[in-house]
Amino acid sequence: MRKKKVSHYSGIGGQAVLEGVMMKNKDDYAVAIRKPDGEIDVEVDVFKGTLHGKKIKEIPFIRGIFNFVDSMILGMKTINYSASFYEDEEAQETAVDKALNKISGGKAEKIMMSMVTVFSVVLAVGLFILLPYFLSSLLAQNLRNASLLAIIEGAIRIVIFLIYVVGISLMKDIHRLYQYHGAEHKCINCIEKGRPLTVHNVMRSSRIHKRCGTSFMFLVIFVSIILFFFIRVDNPVYKVLLRIALIPVIAGISYEIIRLAGRSNNILVQMISAPGMLLQRLTTKEPDESMVEVAIASVEAIFDWKAYLKDEFGYEIDESWMDDEPKPESES
Figure (cartoon, rainbow, N blue to C red):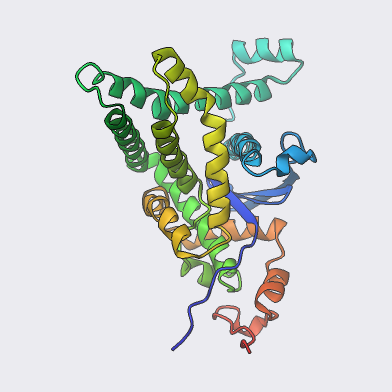
């Protein structure tokens, strides 16, 4: 019987953008966009992130906080870049744009991007952290069991998160974005399974991946439920402040879990990863071949997958069987 191919960690990751895919490998990232004329535009740049080179970014549980912030900043930057290909050329600069440019010395776009990022974080905290607490606290007068209240709060948090994920997935405008999300995952799964990065091989790869942002968000919800269950205070104001104060801790723990998931295949990691991977069936859709071509262009701009296959799986690419699954050197 043929042995199931085990995934090897590649270190690359990415995200879907408007009509394209961003891929990141260490400090290098590439954004590949299918332009309105049908051509693929590839932009390669370097993103070092916050506190680049500082040892604090290497400390477990703390590094996750900075990585989360960096991923949001880069995500907003690349989404704005992709949107620029589809902006109305006749759109005029608004009075707000002119005022911000004048005050900031031409940095209005960066300021607006920062404001949107901060607003997104505040909205997420209010929706997924504070709202479940306030809804569960309505039962406090009739329900004196603190443990049961904590469980109810956790259940409400999960329900709100699921409603959000399902609601977003039903939006027609998001469907193509989720197809590119699927193409991104398929490319990474293709090379991490030891297959040459061709359209044929990518299309038959899975669109589900353990290091996905959807899985990270589920882990954030899951970890928050556990922490809020065991760490308690009585004062309502302190309860709100505690939930906000623990957000960096939750992000740090969740990052370490998903980082482990990307490097391990043991049964415990698979069990922890299962709910998030199930949710990815909503946040990823099957791409078409033209979308896969864009994702491949993004990968190849910042990652030498042929050298990776040689180092990790022990074989060199033979162009004569690029469309077939290769056979690595047999294990002794």
